[in-house]
Length: 289
Image 1 (cartoon, rainbow, N blue to C red):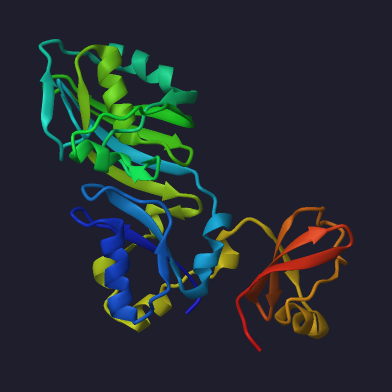
Image 2 (cartoon, rainbow, N blue to C red):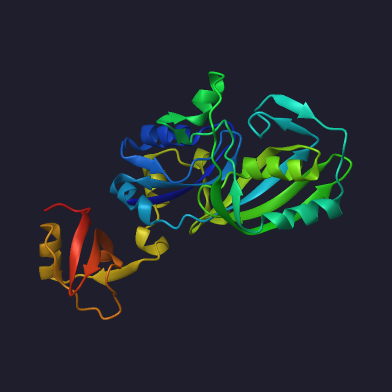
């Protein structure tokens, strides 16, 4: 099996739990996911099956989420799974919330939560946090292309927002930072990823609906359908060279130097190449002779 599954991750499972379930069902060990979701979060989790794990680096990495923020208190994890560390008497209204929301548009710097998997000096931040060690956390630049209010319940101090962002953005940090700017605290109480690159929630398959190898196979997505890189259709002699890891002359004029090219034979991707000068060099091969 070679391709992607667009899985809808349920709440209460880690992203690795999903992989473990799929390995057990399909009996395929080579399975990986693209973009971790916290256990309480739900939504789109792209999964690579078989040798398609070698294509993860070529997948578009923009994301979109629907996030629910509870104002009034901070937690140590910036979400509902953490311990409350501070409560506030101050409240916010819809107008103030929308005004603050606009300050997150474009490129921003954010501090990752101390309970996150980012490594500092070879150790994950949450490992420092769990052991009570203080460690300097440096801000990271991320890009927010859209952040809008969907609903605001003033009496419950709960806001639902949509966030479209770059890879590496922590929605938990956005929830916390919103609370700090409003001076009333805030943390994330629900999160659904609605888009990951070319994968959307509308076409996602519930994990519970994958009960056999056949279920996975019929829902497999051909990488050529969702990857935006250029494709090159090989003839018989070119295919032979590619399967031996050999370069070949580049005949297509629409391929520029340093372009990544997916090498296709019979409607199937068999390798990844890169255009250099007047030839295409082979980077990765998926078929064997």
